[in-house]
Image 1 (cartoon, rainbow, N blue to C red):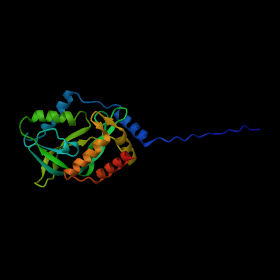
Image 2: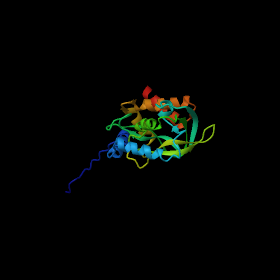
Image 3: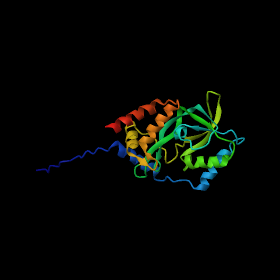
Length: 227
């Protein structure tokens, strides 16, 4: 009589949050912050790309719109062609931790992005840029670029921080459910990730900046939190 072999298959379900965190850990494994010297070199290189260092404009598309943290002499509604706002940057400090990273906004290629441009004073430009670089360029995640922006008063060339899709902090592709799971569960030194997303959405709307997908995502977040 031949022996009877019974095969038992165990089906395990991996949650969207686990899948997303695994992606984050893969990206963050070799992530590091820049040194002061690296940050200074990046800043000077960017400034030296200008013909003259005056009447400088900065394009804001996220928290810079409602919390610029720099002095400016003029602000205009602006649009940037060829890039779109997205939660495409892992955050393991401000809105998350290395164990449970959150997401923050970046500009990825394709589409169009509404935001605001700010013209900073011509005085103390180096010090202003050092503070800006400390906030926006703690690592190599962004590429600072001078790009044309359209405003109601005419076009301006502005400094734009564009997501580097070769960076270890770039999220790649996440599903809607993965995005929600990360945003709802992550929190960092600046507070919960979900507050960052909903507050940014509300601030952009109050500034007359329309982002239909971001409004939709914020409604989903608020609905989940209300359960």
